[in-house]
Amino acid sequence: MLEIYLFINPLGSRCFRCERDVLKIDHQLNTKVNYRFIPFFNMATIQQTIEFYHLDPRSLAVRQNVSNTIYRVILDYMAASFQGKKRGRQFLLMLQDALIKEDSNYSDSLVKNIALQSKLDLKMFLEDRNSTLAKKTFHQDQQFAQSLGITRPSTAVVFDTKQSHYGFLLNNFDYETLITAYKNKQLENDPSIANFVKHYQSRPLTKTMQK
Image (tube, rainbow, N blue to C red; front, side):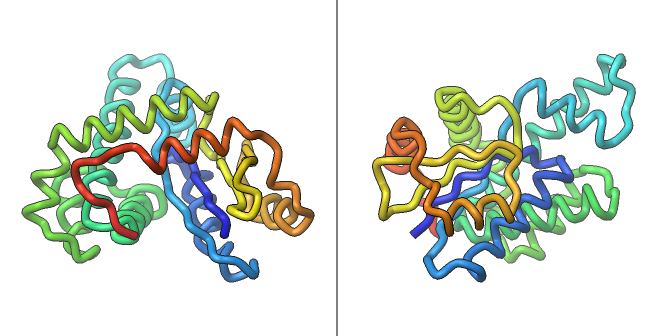
């Protein structure tokens, strides 16, 4: 089985394509694939978003607005994921589709509509998106990313459970590279990555996340 952890910019078009690539991988490989999208948030993420939307990079107001929007989208995704990882992924992809492909403005009404379309419990979702747990989970994810040396989105951490002592870090993730690496048995580069994933999987959460 492959374990894939994809670090994403939730407002980035490249990450949006990467997520779609991850979701089709298990149709091409003769193995089960378990995957998780982990929002990544730093100055590079903000700059990437500003460039993608052709915003003024010199405006502090623009930069602050982009930062706040990314943060809110991440907390929304965390809240949706509390109702199941599969539902969380579905919610995120639908929200990204509205923001990136349809060029909709981020708003509470948009988020509520997508939560309903994703068949989330709306009352629970609205409570969770502003909860201490969502914020705590966000900070834990950022700390794990930093400990692994992740510096930019579209980075994937992959390991094959048959080679569980080793992991594979893939910058600028793309579908073809991962398929080739797996078929050529190259997913065994760095034992520290496997340790990271093991630690990530075992961390305690006060709310159960289900696939």
